[in-house]
Image 1 (cartoon, rainbow, N blue to C red):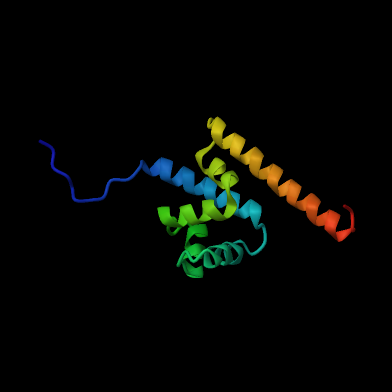
Image 2: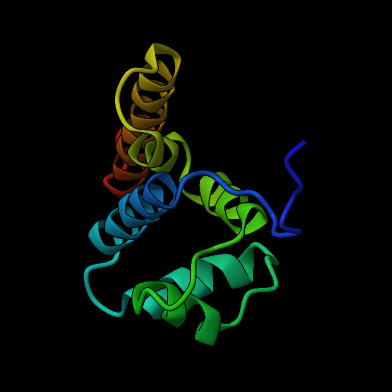
Length: 119
């Protein structure tokens, strides 16, 4: 019978690295300037308990975010982030992205209507 080495089992290193790469790419696209500061501000506002130094380590590839932190990021950025991390092939997630985009668009239209006094 094979004995456990005592180390925690994880997804393959490739899958973890690929998912982290996709997550960081998404965050860089969302915040092309001062990415670390913006991501830290989002997590701080969410009460995620993550330091700016920790966020910086992700982008230096010295560490990866914890699952609970990824969940906080998904809650903050919505289904588009989850879609980027998981990749294609999830129809329900594509529908959630479209619905979120519609809500964002409708919100922008309403703000512009108020701004210009249009009813």
